[in-house]
Length: 61
Image (cartoon, rainbow, N blue to C red):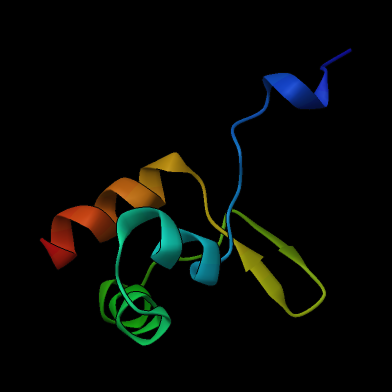
C-alpha cells in the first residue's frame, strides 16, 4: 500500500507562484499559455506536480 508521504507534493497555482517568486497572475497565465493540465483536481482547486512546475519555471525565466 502506497503511503501518502511518498507521493510528490502537488501545489496550487498560488503556492507555485510563491515558490518560484512570480505573481499569481503570471503563473496562471503561463499555465493557460502552455496548456498545462492539472495532475489532480479537488472541487475547483487544480493541483500541479513537479513536472508542471519545472515547465512553468522554464517558461517564466
